[in-house]
Structure formats: structure tokens, C-alpha cells
Length: 182
Image (cartoon, one colour):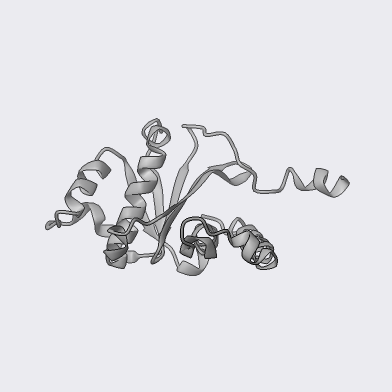
């Protein structure tokens, strides 16, 4: 009980959204899924506001990795549109693909990218690239074995010990992530 009581003030716990605080959206894409983290920086450090992940649809699986990463940004901004449009200043989008930094300045857009660019023009943000090794928390949201399951399959009943081990590993990675200053 006492350890839990001491851990609360220092643990990265979910916070309420505050439109006056600096805001960060972190996105990442894998072959099969998108994941995102909405967080804010206060005087006590970086705190998560929301997490989300999404299994790609069959048509989206055919996109190249750059378009999957772009889709990840668009999807995350759609998820948290109300929060992000209420901000009093611009926000940062962190991704591990440096080619996305010119996303809003592309002169030639494909028919897939054009609607995304139109949607993104509503927001005031900057895209920053960071090394993939620092993306432990967004990565943890999509590197689960259950995204490969067919409908009706249950990962926990197949191998409950592996599932618990994976949760523990992701908790350790997530705690390391919040030690990084953005």
C-alpha cells in the first residue's frame, strides 16, 4: 500500500486536457496497425492524455510505409480533433520518419494524399522527427500479437503467460519513454 501511495505522484498517469499547455501528438505505423499518444507538458513533466491504436483495413495494408505514417498522423488528428483545435498555440507532431517533415509543403500530391492535406490544413502544428528507439510507447500500442488474430480467436486463452509477459515488457518500455525529455 505504501509503495503504491509513493508511486502515484511520480508515475506517468493520465491527465485531463488543458488547452493552455504545450501539446504533443506522437504517431507510429507498422505493417498492420497505427498507434498514437496525445500528451501535454506541464511544470511536473510530460503526462499522457490519451492513447489509441487502430488495426489497418485490408485496403490500407497495401499503402507504402510513408503513406501509412501519413495516415497515422491524419488518423490521430481526427481522433483528437476537438482537443487540438481548442489549443491556444500550435502543437508538435512527433514521428520517426524524417520524410514526413515536408508533408504540408509537397507540391505534387497523390489522390490519396490530397484529402489528407486538406484535412491537415485545419491545424497549426509542426512535424518533428525523432529516432525510432525513442518511440517505445507508441510502438508498444501496436506490437501486440493480437493484431494478427482472425475474428473469434482469443490470444489470452491461446497462451496467457506470453500475454502477461508482453504486458510487463511494455510497461517497462513505457516507463523508460517518459524519462526522455521532449
